[in-house]
Amino acid sequence: MSKTIIIAEEKIASSIYLMRGKKVMLDRDLADMYGVKSRRLREQVKRNQSRFPENFMFQLTEKEVDDMVSQNAIPSKQYLGGSLPYVFTEHGVLMLANILKSDRAIAVSLRIIEIFVKLRELLLTHKDIMIKLEQLERKIVKQDDRHKKQEDEIQVIFQALKRLLNPEQPPRKKIGFKRGKEE
Image (cartoon, rainbow, N blue to C red; front, side, top):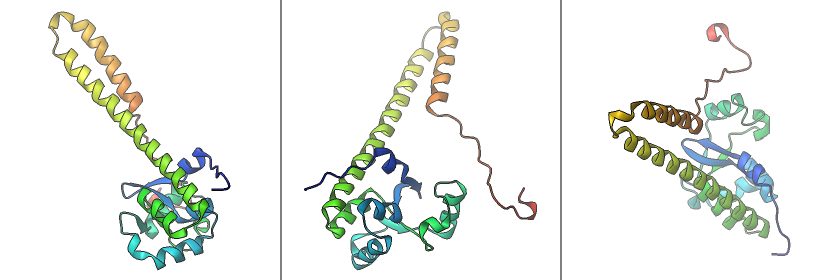
């Protein structure tokens, strides 16, 4: 490859959304990173439809787009170009590099896959910490009642650690125009 493609990790990470329980990226964001027009990317996908099963790519519904806009994941529907966007999973991103066949597409896809892997590793690390905490908590609970005061103090520490690792997310209020009894 003659040129090194540098895309900030933050830009890629901020372009990854959770839809239908999968981490995905919008076709528009991918087209921008690959240096092609969204229309061109969609054309190539349609020509190679058999390479993109439902677990590689799917089209968002009107409600999913509205939810993304209302949660400020995307600024507005105009950002999407006036049609329902396609989203690509990690495997779909890799397949895009195969059908676009440019050095830039390959380099960007590899970078995106690295970010997906980092995210997965972070989640596994978080999960491992929780498992270890629970094992330690069970071990301490089984100890003798003589150490009840120490045990209570340690329980408080465990509860604080769990709150730090799993903070409660207050429900978000919808913004924008409200009809009649929606308030």
